[in-house]
Every structure is written in C-alpha cells, then in structure tokens.
Length: 375
Image 1 (cartoon, helix red, strand yellow):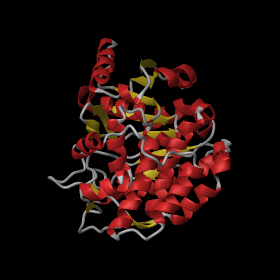
Image 2 (tube, rainbow, N blue to C red):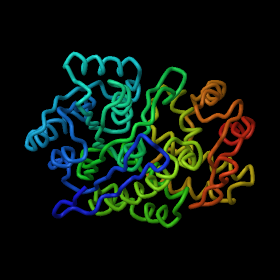
Image 3 (cartoon, helix red, strand yellow):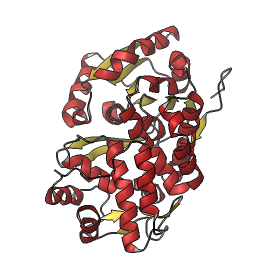
C-alpha cells in the first residue's frame, strides 16, 4: 500500500504459514477514522460494505465512519447488535447474518468491524463464514482491540461451555488504528487493554514492559504520542509472533500467557469480568504457578502484581468464584491437549519458558493451580 502524505509507515503482517491469507497493513495514526474510506477502498475493495458495530460504539463512531466511506465513493450500511461480551454468541451471529441476507449483501461485499474485541471477534466470524468467506477490515475502538485482538485473524463466539469455543482463523485485509478514538473510552476499559500490552512485554520484551509501566500517567491522560508508541510496539510483537504461526500450532501459543486462567474466570463470572481484567489476574496467577513449578524466576509474580495494581487492574479473585465451577470451566479450555491442561509460562520478565519441542507450553496439575489461586 502506498504511503499517504503525513502518515507514518504501516506495520505489515505476513502470515507465512497460511496459504489462504495475504500480507496486510496495520496503519496507526491519530485522525485515521476520517480517512478510512480511502484506506479501505484501496486495501479491501468491494462492491459494497457492511459496517458491523455494537450499540455503544455505533452511537459515537458509526456516523463519522459512514461519512468517510461516502466521501470516498463507497456504499455502506450499518448493522449493529447489543453491546456486551454476553452477546458474542451464535444467536447474535445468526441475527446479524440474517440481516445481511435480507439486505442482499453478496459475495462481492466486505465487512468493516467497528468496535472493540467483541465486535472484532463477532464480525470476524461473520466474515469468515458468510458466503463461505468475504473480506474484512478492522477498525478497533478499544485499547485491547488495538494492541491485540484486531491483529492476527482470530475470530470467535462464546458458548455456555466457555469462551471462544466456536470460531475460525480469518485474516483482515487492513487494520486502521486511530488512537483518538480512545478519548471516549472509560478508564476501566483502557486499563483492560493495558493488560494485553503488559503481556506482550512479559513474553518478549522486558524493556517494553518497563516503558509501559513508566508511562502509565501519560497513557491514562490519553497522550497521543504515548498511545501511538504503546500500540505500535504491541502490534510489532504480536505481528512477529503471528507471522511465524498463523494457526496457533506452536510458537503463537506464547500469546496465551495469562489466558488459560483468564478464560475460565470469564466463564464462571458470566462475563462480568472484562477480558483484560481476567487476563490481569491470569498474568499474576500464571507467573505464581511458574514460580511454584520452578520454571519462573522467584519474585516475578510479585513484580507483575505491583505493576498491574499501578495500571488500575484487579489481581484478586472475587470471593464468590466457586472452586468447583472454576475447574469445570478450566477443563473445557480449547488449548488442552487430550486430558492435559497446558499453560504458556515465562521464565522471567521478557522471556517465555518452553521450546519448540514442548510446543511452548507446559502441563500444570489442577492441584498446583488450586494451591496458587485458592490456597
């Protein structure tokens, strides 16, 4: 893609192990929403566009996006669903898909996902399955989606049995990140996104982890330069990992650090915990598990805990979490291999444990998990 005047260079994701996906650009620039039409028209050409968003985000950003698309001569229509993780279901997928069919959206159309992680996951799965697959452009509006879920092609729906148990890999054609959209994001949502950024530092880049900690005041102050640096480095890390393992059969599993615990917590909380909040608890807990096993350097969990508290994230389990229900949810984790619960752990801040031979994961007994989480 050619560079626009005044725009920084994009990051390019290369899904090298996938025959059905092309390289795509991730553009990071304040004010990008107003120019979305020209970027999408070039990178994701289509006869018409279906903008999929939720009831909260669409009230704020759908109108300016539709105006930007119209100014570039692109025909687009809005399809929205009720906001909330609990609406990332097969039922809502069916409702939105039926709406597309009623509107006569065909295979020559493309999806535009406008929203946070829930919108990106749901719209991505719709794009992966509608008419056997159509193109999608991602415009993330939450920090969590900007630094993590909009890149990599994972899509998914939640079920009563657990989170993201129905889904597909479907890479976007382009990702447009406008940090100015974070000005309307509540602080607890911003903090939730920080958990994924901190995770990226924990698994690959200790310096980035420290820089994020040192710039928390700027980040919560919505400093544009600080946000751009944060998003860009996180996407660099994730793009590098994803490019090596598009379908999560090996190295990409390191991105699951903190997530085995987190997904079980989300399920038993009825998705009352934000994903990033659950991940924060998972980061601390899985570091503590690693210390118990002798895999993670002593004192790592405490250091992580201190930074999470500074980042306004939870580190304690809700007293109402029932041990039995937690382990029931854990038993349905999609990353299990046979009867084994597998965890991605770190050896120290900035370095993952494991190897290619171990699949970058380690078996952890429920007894160890119970000791760390429930005492």
